[in-house]
Amino acid sequence: MLRGGGSSGLGQSLLLAFGLLWGGGLHALAADEADLRDGKRVFRTQCLGCHSVEAGENRAGPSLAGLFGREAGTLSGYNFSQAMKDADIIWSPETLDEFLQGPNELVPGTKMVLWPLEERPRRQVITYLKSLAE
Image 1 (tube, rainbow, N blue to C red):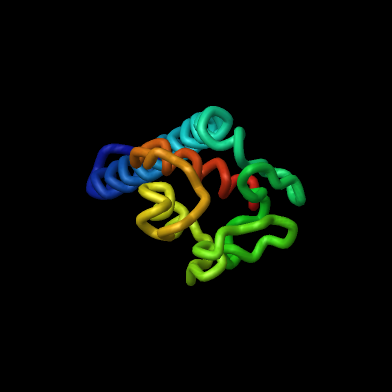
Image 2 (cartoon, rainbow, N blue to C red):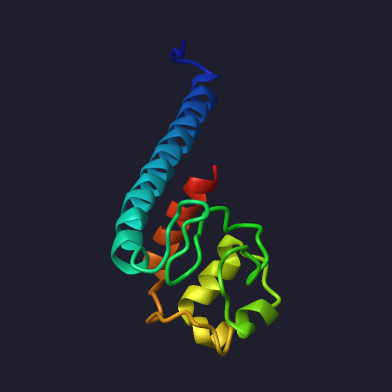
């Protein structure tokens, strides 16, 4: 319990620091939840026409189930472009972010047809895809 006196300044500082850390954590959690929700929406409107998140369900594009950690162009059952087969990419949030900025710039000759996504929707889609892998 904090009371007036010599040590209360330290105690109040610790409480303030804890409150800021706790509040910052809640803010970050809320931001992640918003990115997850919005990422699912962006995925439905921008990606779902060509990609599934169900394993083994390829469409015009390959399934994105289990994407992170997978070597580009190697998903069994999907006919990748030679460019994607030859790409030296292991999919991670960082490589996917780079790819979604301009697929044909990172992998010239890819079959992926996409207008480059802005930073925020890219982050949101990546947050959504990461949540599926957890």
